[in-house]
Length: 181
Image 1 (cartoon, rainbow, N blue to C red):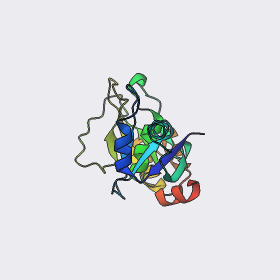
Image 2 (image 1 turned 45 degrees about the vertical axis):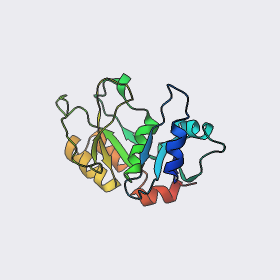
Image 3 (image 1 turned 90 degrees about the vertical axis):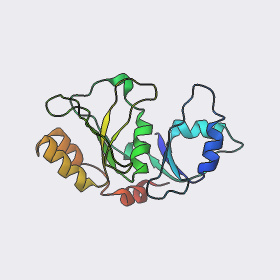
Image 4 (image 1 turned 135 degrees about the horizontal axis):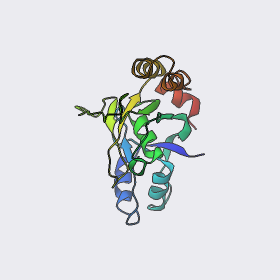
């Protein structure tokens, strides 16, 4: 099972990032709540960072990747440019979220337009490095937020609302407490 890691030494991460093999990509997301050089990475990125130094980078928290659910919905498209799931999930944790939904297309199949004003907005853009089409995501910081948004957007009896009601964590603190290892 893949894991996501909360790493405290941003300076060391930046130093090691320059040492990873050419063509490899380390996707590291600064923690938006804690700050101070802390960041979240997925297992693949952490392995690259670990290999670039004399010893593995210590992580203060480790969470199973599947503890951060992703909802893609029925209209998923542009698969070649989807971000790696570990990067998307690490991005969610960096904003102290518990889940995320793909919202690139609206109910009518039209592309969603969104211009974020700040980094901590629940709606953000993310695609695979070098990917073509962009993707729009809706981050959920609580199960209640997810359920309300999915019911309003897709309807109370929708697959999305059912997904949100089944989320395993009520909020970020509960997620970390339950899964941290």
